[in-house]
Length: 195
Image 1: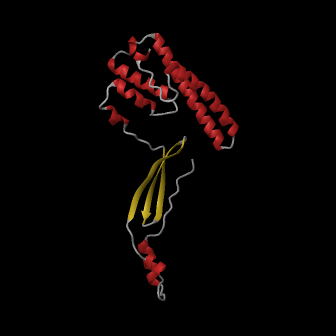
Image 2: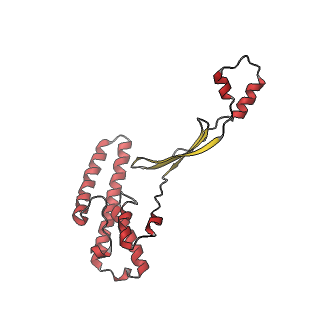
Image 3: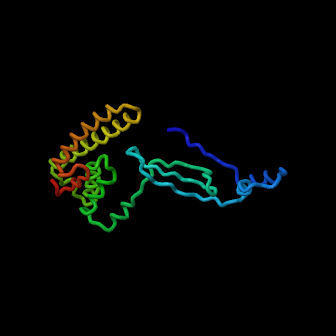
């Protein structure tokens, strides 16, 4: 990752002081506008979702219309799911776990279901078939996410063919997921009642 580089511009007051030291003839309108001192403002630009690779937020420091500083904040995303979950039952919140990481929705379903079952004290009572299916779901989700990551990386470095091959294999996994859950993308599957 390239280092973060701060870009600083001189303060309007410093520009005005330098201009006052040098004698000048009748100032033009643009020269007069340079001497106007404005307030600095910090502004969030984003978070935006430029691609599958992640979310980008840029913290801008503005001096009037001039960007004095821009600090990128990669990976920033908070949807407030914890607050949403406060007013829901266990089964009502399961569809939200699909959307926490859309590259591996089945793994998110399993992680949430395991956490709730452990809190309820029923994690040791699950049948082996349920546990086996959950492991298979997590592995399919992991492979699918890795295929997308590899394909997107390959496309970024100019290997479009690799991207096409990885997405072909990913579609095969989605066919299996669809046969299992009835959905390809937002599965909402891993609660114990499903098994």
